[in-house]
Image (cartoon, rainbow, N blue to C red):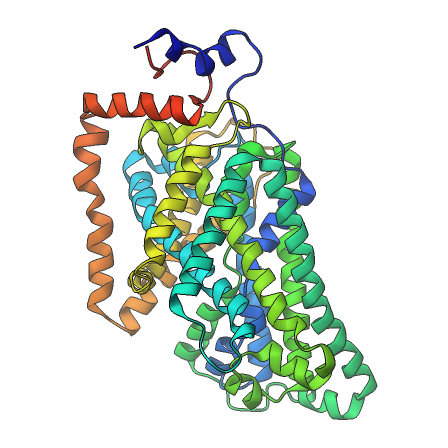
Amino acid sequence: MGKEENNDPKDVQRKGKAKMQLKRNIGYFDGVSFIIGSIVGAGIFVSPTGVLKHSLLNVGVALTIWTVSGLVSLMGALCYAELGTPPPFSGGEYSHIKRGLGSLPAFVFIWTSTFTKPASNAARALLFAEYATQPFYGICPAPDVLKKCLALAVLWSLGILNGLSVKMSAWVQTVFTLLKMMALSVIAVGGIVLLVTRQKESLARFEDMFSSEIPNASQVAEAFFQGLYAYGGWWSLNYMAEEMKRPSRNIPLTVMTAVPGVIVFYLLVNISYLTVLTPKEIVSSVAVAVTWADRVIPSVAWIIPLSVAVSIFGALNCSMFTLGRLSYAGSQSGHLPLLISMLNVHSYTPAPAMIFSTTIASIFIIPSDLIMLTNYFGFSAWLMTGLTCASLIVLRYREPHLHRPYKVFLPVPFMMVAMSFFLVLAPIVWSPNMQYVYAFLFMLGSLIIYLPFIHFKLRFAFLDKITCHLQLLLEVCPADGPAEGKCE
């Protein structure tokens, strides 16, 4: 091709100005913000009723399940902390499964995640649009076209932000995490104050916490599912491990700070709800935090719907950031097109990966009914968690002399593997549905792509030409150096 095409992307590395790789811009406080921001979404504000409902309104059982769910999440996060340190790779579960169990299971993971994770981001964007537009329409529903346009605008704004600057994205995440934690603090502190000032009336609800009907095993398990879902997102830090400053120290420390912090806040917020509302009122409420605010702070109750929108926005930013790193890692391993693993020559961010994941999420927004199809892939998240913890066990025995700055107590990953496979099989056994079969067949369908394009390395010359043109258009360059894969 022409002389011009040999300039920018190559010269950046040839002149030795900087090595083309992700920069370590994420510190300890940024990591804490990303984990908390990923876990705390709209659920704790709007509908923390699932645990209480399946606990048969037994307050003691419900609070116990909230605690145990948090501790299980902490165990999983500590397993991931070990996997994220020696050495740190972007891509989260994908990179760990590939390293421990091989290329095929890793490809199944990224094949499934390429559809389910953008669909989750699309759902968050639509939920944000719902809360952001509804105040302007009162009791009338906001137009679907308006909500979809706003959802697309939010998706692409965050996609562009994450593609331009890691520091700016981390700053936005920190700000929105602080705002949502301030809102949770209002609810938690308000509950404590009421508990102290109305001692007899409030404490009566907690004196005989276990006195009501005790749920059976299947009901406890269902409540446990709901609790674990509320803590979802504890795995997010491993997607950005390659960008963490001092990862050997900061990854375990961040996990040990953020996840216990969320457990404490979730318990305090639930106690606050139970101080003001009866269990029946909580279960019947459409938005528990709004009902709580109407009772406790009626003059500024509008703060809660605003806080829900803020919380969703922060969770969406974190989810988009991590999804970009997953696409980047998959491309580096040859499981996605080469262009996706390239970095912008100015910002050293995986801009093509952000464009790729944001485009897929946008497709799910336009016919939003597609999002419903991904609900049956919930079991796949715990399947991959189990495979990731199994990878830790495999690597312990395969690489016994590898320096591990942090090592989790070995029975913990065994417990996580057993629990993960229980969580995979339980909903399928208790509520069998053909949609689970379709979801499983979709995962197996990854073999249709894997065998010709990954295993046998089938290539099309015209795709290389398209990659070259897009590389020059986007001003991106392959990570880690020399001229491999560039336009000549």
